[in-house]
Amino acid sequence: MIRPSVLIIGGGPAGLTAALRLSARGNAVTLLEQGGELGGRLIRSGTDAIPPVFLGSHRASLSLLKTLGTAGHVRFSGGVNLEFPLSGDRTARLRRPWAPAPVHALLSLAMFRALPFQDRWRALMLLERTWEGDPGLPPDLESRTANEWLADRGQSAAARALVWSPLARFLLGDDLTVVSAAMLITMLARSFLSARRNSRIAIPTHGMRHLLLEPARTQLLRSGATIRLSTAVSQIRFDAQRVSGVDLQTGGTLAAECYVAALPHRSLSRLLPEKALAHYSYFQQLTSLTDSPALTVHLWLDRPLPAPRLLLLSGKTYHWMVSRPEGGPTLVSLVATGKMDILDRPDRELLQVALHEVRAAFPTLSNARMQEYRIVREPHAFLSVRPGTAALRPLHRSPFPNLFLAGDWTDTGLPATLESAILSGDLCAEAIHTKMEEHR
Ligand SMILES: Cc1cc2nc3c(=O)[nH]c(=O)nc-3n(C[C@H](O)[C@H](O)[C@H](O)COP(=O)(O)OP(=O)(O)OC[C@H]3O[C@@H](n4cnc5c(N)ncnc54)[C@H](O)[C@@H]3O)c2cc1C
Image (cartoon, rainbow, N blue to C red; front, side, top):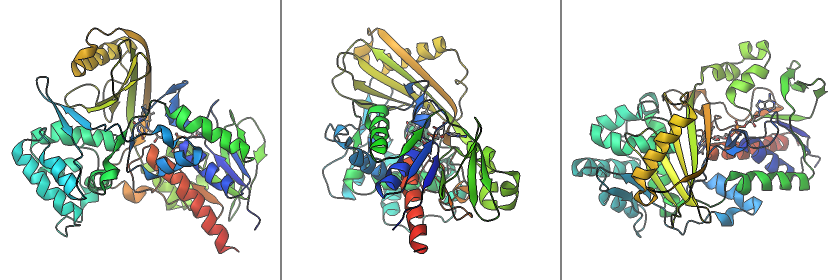
């Protein structure tokens, strides 16, 4: 079978995944990226924007790394647990007892000291029923915030602040008062209320550049794909029925048989002609999507920490932090997500707070000296998964038969993180394949 040529706009993880999957199937792929390197929001000014953390439930990411030959760096055997610092020097860990599903999750919650006893008991009842697909779960979960839903289900303000809110920021990139109850439940069910292996956590010593971006680039070039960096598309051209080409900012037009827009939703809206935006609700909906900011601070400290750790924080400036040994020094990455006022603060102030919070969390680093730092600010880091957003996220097939969408914000059923971006690339490649089969 002759496979159509595909032009992919956007060299972030979604575009890269689609490119890898399609070129592996024999499609002639050209990837256009406006920046000087691949990676999209994973890389900002040459720095990793996100600390590498994988959950066992990140099936699309793990499968991609397997294809790229880097899955071996993601070792789940270290036994990283979610940690919640409590008052004093105490820390509660969400352990993963050896027991068959669903007992492991229920035991893990029963032993979880961060939640007061009453909240733990109510959460146990709730989670047990969630697991079983309890018909008692209200049908309106997508129209309510997770905060409202948890309060309704008897979770105290203290439990929501100490446990549920940091968990929502870590899993969904936003606050409990913003995200939909449905999205929180989806992620809890996928990661903690299913097979025990899905709740495993790995913090590899290598960043995304090494695990994903460099091997993806090598594999694409090896399979004959063309990668054009510093090549921005200024408009997608349509004739009556199909996409006919893309205009480049530097002049000229490129054409292919199929097109994949693997762009943030705001960038895609800017490339569409007025007519497409006005005529198709599929495209109109993009303008109703909103984003949440994120800020990452990486600190290299001159003391070793023996094992990687992942702490979810409550009542702090940063919402979670990851430590991982890097030979001698330790790299601690702190992430703040969701509505926040710190994005515009000067580096000096952000560093001061970050060091203070790291030393409070890791007493053995109290005298550690900072060797180096990097700060990444991004006002549009994640799609905000507020109530009602699920219905606005587009499917990968567009109304035009040769235009397909990918991106963390498309309809993957997951919060808009790296896992969603990679899954969207898979689904988009699958949609193109299915379309070709239909035309055989
Ligand atoms: C500070 C920060 C922290 C984050 N933390 C986490 C985290 O902890 N965990 C997690 O899973 N995710 C995190 N993310 C989100 C993660 O980076 C994204 O989910 C992921 O990068 C989305 O991939 P994508 O391919 O859909 O989009 P993008 O990565 O945005 O890629 C889109 C690409 O399209 C290119 N492009 C745009 N317009 C054009 C054009 N006109 N022509 C050509 N190319 C164009 C862009 O340059 C970009 O390379 C974080 C992001 C940031 C910024």
